[in-house]
Image 1 (tube, rainbow over the protein chains, first blue to last red):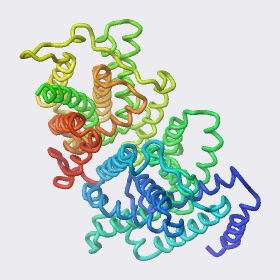
Image 2 (image 1 turned 60 degrees about the horizontal axis):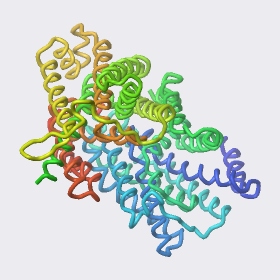
Image 3 (image 1 turned 90 degrees about the horizontal axis):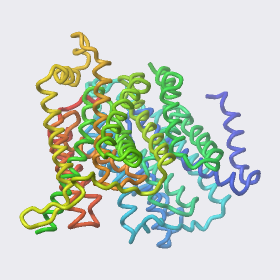
Image 4 (image 1 turned 120 degrees about the vertical axis):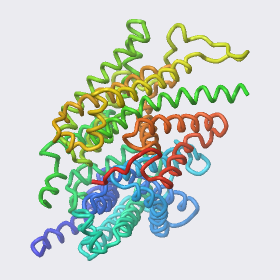
Length: 297
Length: 288
């Protein structure tokens, strides 16, 4: 860890200087990547550290985004709207996660996906609140560099908290549950409570990321809640490597760069996302994700 | 009265389409332990294949046949090339089928375009039917009849034939079935052929009932999820009952509470898993 310090300082300096070096579209992309990085790192808490497979995590992103948009339209400043949006996303998980966790296994995946799709339908149909397919416009009141720096700060804080968390006794128990759930149970750990707690924590960060995303894009639409986006978040985690926290951050940056490079040339983007997913799963005996898994075993 | 009967007829037909869709999903999960998130995309592919054959050659049922066979072949292909390499790995399998669904959906969009297509029912069933002095469209009766027949045939095959016994054995315990000398890979491939063939069959048969649109694949996959979660994964009877239930609540919802129609099936699902996490007729599946 000590040897990584100069690298880290260099990285931070570069990140802080970025608005001065870049402007316009590249800076926009950097902000976008940072938003996704927060969400991907938080999702890694569930996928990598806890071994759960949610497919509805985009619901937390979307809820955070809609909540932030609605609050800012009501006149709340962005810094106040951010934690409140994270809270809204956490409340959603507090209500839905017990059902999904109780169902367990592959049911967890299916139930979280179904819940997220229900939210998308709601966002699409409840036009009085969400604006329907037109979405909601958001005025963050910040300049592009200002938003970048705010997102950078949020990302740094999120990663710090998440890193501390996975190193804490709490994180160790999550690890134990993933590796051998019956043993963790036999040792007396309340497995359900730990899982529930981890889901709530991840939800808060994913909601925060969604709120930042809404502020930075200036709009939220029901499309932000599509299951394609859930897959995209998972791809970021797998691309960079699960169970590393920094891996998903890297994955987010790689993915956003790739998307920017390719999506201007084709409109079959969803198909490419699918191929990428297939390549990640099949390539290299199961992709980067399997590499990290093998490292564990 | 007429409105209620209409709603009932359409709900039954929709329910049977959902059964054709989710029976395959449930079968595949039971045998191969794969939650096939590309199932709705295969359904839509079947619908478009049937549509194209009908456009080119004429007979509707030839289109249904071609779609079903193509679906079965693609099912085997998907199992051989993709899922058999990931046997026993839950997350990679889910992701692989998710990736496959995006690829299929975009291929469909590239080949057939994004316009909404409607298919007219085949010849003797394209007109109305008089029953007790009331006029009904006749095609929903055909769909309902086909759905019930497929259910009865599947039940018979699963309960009374050797192949059915082998499928049930692998569903109950793949390791033990393999130890006893059953060829699990062969049975798994056959199940994929049957399951995805059924989905494509449902798509082709259902195309006059549901208009073909570019977002239909995600909707159908979701309906398959709701049905199997309500009915219980791996249970044919559960899939049948749940498909009927979901068909009824969404059909009547669309008529009497259009604002809530799309949310009602989810509400039903939430209610069921709150009371019975394993679904109405499901067994508890290990979380491994």
